[in-house]
Length: 164
Image (cartoon, rainbow, N blue to C red):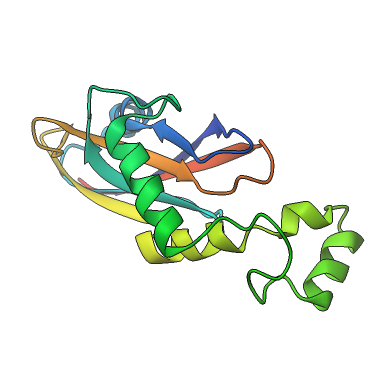
């Protein structure tokens, strides 16, 4: 059997958005009626990714959990946030023209760092489903991350369950 459902999260602007989507994913699993198989949590947004990680308990001054802030800090070192033109080749003149034709502003196009970050981390996670329970271990959580810091927007978390 295959079951698919989606739900929404709201991203922030000016900082990466981390969303714990574990409870929402569990609700989808319950509605599916599938007891054993795999659960794929994914993003079709190319500046977003999905990871599994434990709760860090502590928060940084930004409001992110400390493990989340550590990930952001590491990514900032590897792939700097695009704060002005010329840091990256993208977006070029054709991309900016395309964006303008689709009512997107130039600032919204300068999110190359988010595209690169999500391509490295990956846009999906697969979790084993055993007897109707996500096999995340004792401390595991599923996080949907929006690395795009150009503007706040609603994002879609996709969940597909394959099993019996």
